[in-house]
Length: 242
Image (cartoon, rainbow, N blue to C red; front, side, top):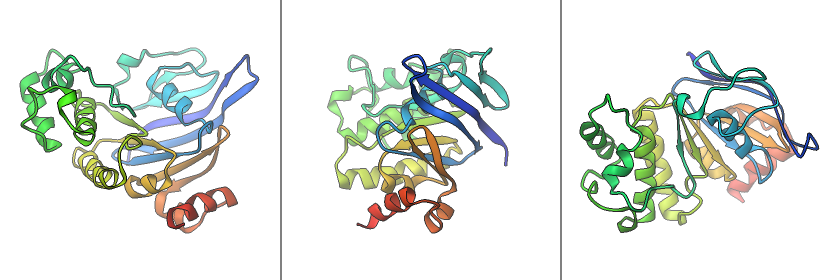
């Protein structure tokens, strides 16, 4: 299986080096896999995805996408050239644009936008909403539209940042199953960022646990569940059944 993303010894600090957000983080992500990045507030999750998307600049290390260096101490590829899609916690839909206009916003001019929008709307099960506006949809529907908009340009990598945190429990459970199915159906490689271990276990192939900017444990989700390597990871896993 090919590697799509390589993070190698990445360091990011703030406040002139006094605050270490990421401390020599390294991992690989295989094509078609869903990686859950789990950790409490301040663990480094947000910093990590900002570095991958190009919204922040690393201090040390290398980030490769499809074997191409996109960030290092001497190379920086702009976010719009990285082919990384993003689904934000608050959906980030344009309120003044229709659903069609929202989804088609990032699609290349070389692509038939009408066909592509129809394709992704069918994929998420909302084919009849393209003329409506975001405020006319439920929270769950808006989250699906945010996913469709991110998938529409056919990104090489999709990042979902706490995508279920604004939803009630019943909707959250249903939506995470649906989104996992959609991501797998499109063979999209994804990073799913969450502080909720239950969401992580439900949706991921692989899991990476961060604490204070360090990777505490990473590997296949089932292996981490069966063999937690520290008290911290065990407590996280125990919280699912508590």
